[in-house]
Length: 536
Ligand code: PHB
Image (cartoon, rainbow, N blue to C red; front, side):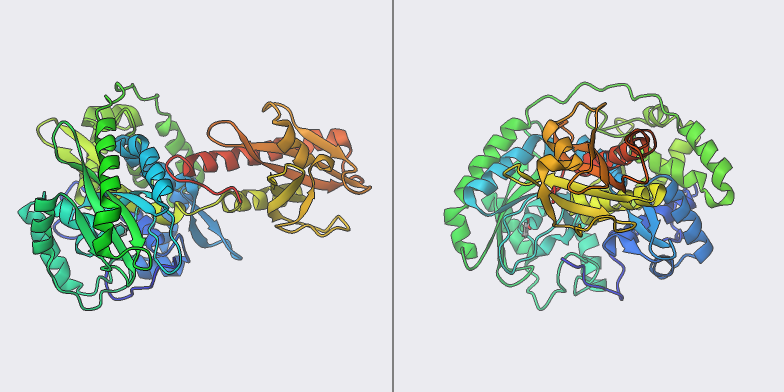
């Protein structure tokens, strides 16, 4: 869904790029600005020009340039476009949201049950967590049919326009209620929530709905987001504390179920699933592991050396703090953060204070630990979670084609395994009489790509086909593997026999091809940790 443009109101996850007077003195301004750049890019769908970023953040062009150069060095954005200047979020950035989702443990424990319920009911099922006076999705098993919005992992919705909202609100503090009141006063049309259409007229009965949810233990959304969209929700409670860990929802359309009959038809099955989910939450967490030693200091020093003024060290160091958290490291003390990142204690402390100020990290004074908040998903997750393998591969194939001056492609096997189908391509010159474009199918056995896909070659082998398909054509291909090590696609370089001998193909073309394949794999593995990445 293209995010509607809302020029008048700051989104609610917004952090102003400029540090307000109320910020603690320790706040690291470049980190505040870097976070704002990432959030504005996220709201824009993943791409902005530098002048677009200037407008969206209010920062000077030179500052925007230094921040984007630093983010590009970290692999979190790519600078592309005709003049090489458009700023585009990369799958690598998902490591920040992945750190939050891994530390939260809920997706790993509950995704499979949500997916199974969606299959059984043939309706969408989602998991959401509370984010102040909003809700944020952490999982989506989407079976959305005609005419309804579907939300992405990381999307933020105002609590009162959802079914999970009243359930979370049963645990709200005075502060949360006050915050909602203020937001409703300054943004009556929800323009600060780019994932949903603006609010029309709506009775503000949220207090009553919350009281009702407290009595019933479930809650309804009768077309609060858009006409036709209905949902029923049940809280999944932490077995130890009985507090809400997340809320599970079944989402349907009035053409299939009215909001009222969701209660009679789907609620009982949702409740059974939630009971099973609560059992799953009893699983003891993995014992904490010592973090791998970090070579961050060496890397930042080298980056500074290379990029000089363009590299903002405090931003790079600060962002690394978020990656210290994970599955077996959900809550960390300051000393543990410093150790995991290799940062000086004072540096780690200032980064954590900055994140707490931005609402990305929470501090528990009783245990002296820090945890990530759902807001970490506002750093790129919604647009990046809707990617595909061809989209992941395209920029890497382009870099490869530019480097070796030959065409580079990605292909998958068709279901019959008789043919390959091209899914991405970066062409330099046309070297074949057949015109290969995305979608072209060729016999699998006659192509290097097909053989790489069929052979499931051990990683050190490759596939070279001489005179493939037609005389004079030579191609070399390597497999692309998913997180589980299964071959899911293949990448190749195709060249003219007159340009390279078979030996040269191996010597000159294989190393850059293998490097490209591992970059595609790294992005695929990052993106598919908590989301399903389509292969075509
Ligand atoms: C969703 O998962 O898309 C969803 C959940 C609850 C709602 C609306 C939509 O109230």
